[in-house]
Amino acid sequence: MSTTRTRVAIVGGGPAGLMLSHLLHLSGIESVVLDHREVAEIETTHRAGILERDAVRLLVDSGASERVLTEGDRHGGIHLRFGGVNHHVDFERHVGASVWLYPQTEVFVDLHRTRTRDGGDLRYGISGTQVHDVTGSPRVTYVDAEGVTHEVRAEIVVGADGSRSICRALVDPRKQYFREYPFAWFGFLCEAPKSADELVYTRSERGFALISQRTEDVQRMYFQCDAGEDPTAWSEDRIWSEMHARTAGHDDFVLRTGPVIEKSVLPFRSFVQTPMRHGNLVLAGDAAHTVPPTGAKGLNLALADVRVLAEVLERALVKDDAAALDGYTERALSRVWKAQHFSYWMTTMLHRTAEGSDFDELRQLGELSWLVGSEAGSAYLAEGYTGWPSR
Ligand code: PHB
Image 1 (cartoon, rainbow, N blue to C red):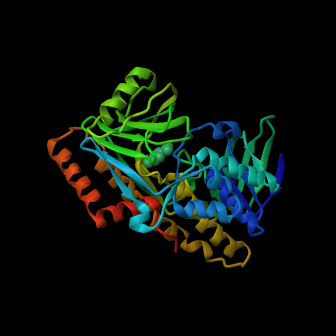
Image 2 (image 1 turned 90 degrees about the vertical axis):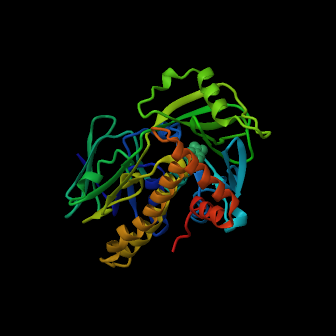
Image 3 (image 1 turned 120 degrees about the vertical axis):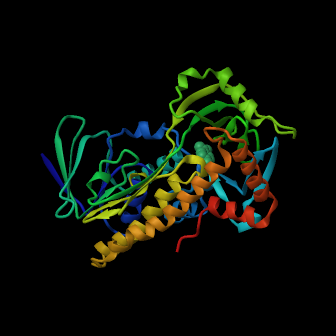
C-alpha cells in the first residue's frame, strides 16, 4: 500500500472539488483530489448551464476560466411564458446584474485544465474509496485501476462527492431535511437553432417546460414529467409534440426543433444536511444539499460553498486559527436556505400540481401576472436568479 501525505484530501473531482483544490493552491495549500469517475465521464454528463454573477467572478478572478467570458453568453434576463405569451424579466434593469449561460461541463473542463497545468494531484477512475478517522487523523483509502490499494493522509478531508456522497454519512450526529415533489424533469439535447435570445420558462396547463441553450446549433430543453418516467418511452415525435403543446400561444414565438441527440429523466428533490462539518471532515455542494433544477442553483451553491471553505481552510491551515472551521456550516447554510426557498418557489409557481386543481392554476397565473407586472415582483425574481451577493 502506498501512502501520500497532504494537507487536504478532497473526495470528489467535479467542479466543487476542483475549484476548492485550485483556490487552496493559490493560498499555498496542497491537496489531493479523488474521484471514482473517469474524466471523460464527467466531461460528457450534462448538467445545468446557468452561472450567477458571483460564480463567473470567481472563475475569472481566480484565473480558472477566461473562456466563460469569451465562449459563455451573458443573459440579462429570462422570458416567463404563460397564458400563451412571453413576458421578459429584465435582470439588469431590476438589480443591475446578469447571469451567464456556460454549461457545467465547460466549467469542469476549465478547472481540470487549470489544476493539471498547475501540477495538481488529481486521481480519477479509482474505486473502493473509504474515509477513516475524521475526528482524529483522517485517511482516505482507495484502489487504483491496477488493483493497488492507496492511502492519503490529510489534516482535513472535504466531501465534495455529490448527491450520492459517501462522506455525508460520516457526520454524526446529523439532521436531514427533505422535500419530495410529485414530478420530475425530462431533459434532452437537440440539434436546432435557438428559439429565443434568452431562456424561456413556460407554465402551461400541461405542465412546465424550459427552453435553454448550449450553442448556436445545439439546444437544451426540459419538460415536467412523472417521477418514474422512462426516457425510452419518448420518441422524438412525442417529445416535440409535447413541447409544442406546452409552448403554444398567441404571440410570434416559434419553438425551433431538430433531431434529439440525448435524453434523460432528472431527479427532482430538495435536501439539506446539517452540520456541514464534523471534526476534520467538511462537506461542500451536493454532498450536503440538493435543490430542484428550476432555479439553476446547484452548481452556483457548490461554488459559493467552496469559496467560503477555501477562506476558512486558509485561516485554519496557514494562520493556525483552529476555530476557523466553526462558522463554516452557518455561513454556507445561510445561502443554501435562500436558494432552497428560491428553487422551491420557482418550482411551485411554474409546475402543474399532481391534482392539477383549478385553484392552483389560477393562483399560479395570479402570481405570475403580479410578478411580471410589478417592479417589486420582477426585482424579487431577478435578485434570486442572479444570486445574493456574498458577504
Ligand atoms: C440548463 O441550461 O441546463 C438549465 C438552465 C436553467 C435551469 C435549469 C437548467 O433552470
